[in-house]
Image 1 (spheres, rainbow, N blue to C red):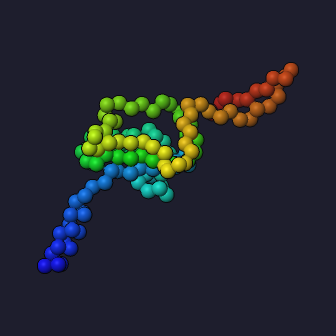
Image 2: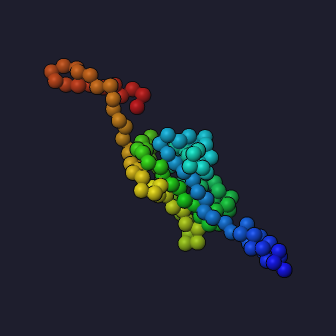
Image 3: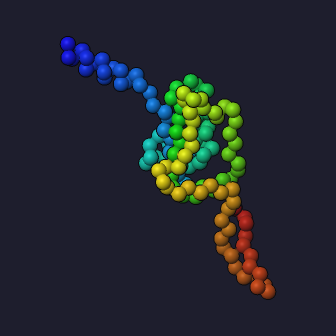
Length: 129
């Protein structure tokens, strides 16, 4: 009798689903799965696209959580979210920082390589930025 009860609980545990968990980090790789904190994605856009695909395939019954690891994220282009990116009360889609880590998202680029030009004016090349 006890063995059957244990089997019942184990079987029930397998049926419980959890939200999809994705990790993103400035030093990540968009070719990674993003499913492990040690193999994060590099961009919000890639995380969004993976969630879109899974949602369209009906693979997000519990929703998704995207955790941004500490660092500065420089955006090459705007990250746009639409109706297809929305969650529901039963299956929310959440983007948040990981714990209390400091996350900065910038639509600008750091300009380096400054050198004197003339008359107190400095210049830097923007090629490749």
